[in-house]
Amino acid sequence: METKDTSNQKPVYVQEVVAHQNKDEINLVDLALVVVRRKILVLVIISITLVAGLITAKYNSEAISHNYSTTIKIGSVGSHVVTNQIIPLESPETLLGKIKHNFIPQVLNEYDGSYEIAANIPKNSHLIFLQVASKNEKDLIPIELLNKITQKVEQDHNKIFTSIKNRLDASLKKVDVDDYIGQLATLQQTYVVSEPIKSVTSTSKFSNKTIILIALFAGIFLAVFAAFFADFWCKVTDKISEEN
Image: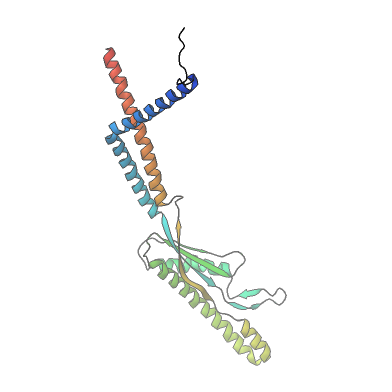
């Protein structure tokens, strides 16, 4: 009776695994061949998405805003005896009203173009914060606008300061010299805390590099999908033709 030599035979489950691996390898090759066959379609779709990404990146660059800001410190005429709080030359709210309704319109009328100048009072302070935004990195007009507004504020407050000081000088004969010196020490002119400084902000959540990378990966995905769909559609139409 003959016996079969099974020493070189692989177990059934091993054969199935090997066959499955070979099948996967063939499938990967087939997938690659589909992409190669449809390479023109793939390249066209990737090119379109890249162009779209570059256009989006261009508009994203325009979303970058160059902000110019400066701060004005309101001068003082003394302090309260009880609370020891500083008494400003003019209340911040009054000065803010002058800036918004008088100084800003006067300055803007001297320039062509649309600029928006924001003015506000930081909470519980005697400061006025001014800001101008521009999309042009080399635009110097915002600095000129801020300088002209601060000059108008200083000129206006110089008049108030001079008037108060003149009254104080006139009362020198009626008050003690030490009191005069003390009052004079608390008298402070309005001044610009910082010259116009520039900061850059962006309204976009993504950088240009990120946008282009997203467009590239999206293009590859869409291109591969389109290639397989086109190949599948061709096979379906060929099958229908054969049956007819």
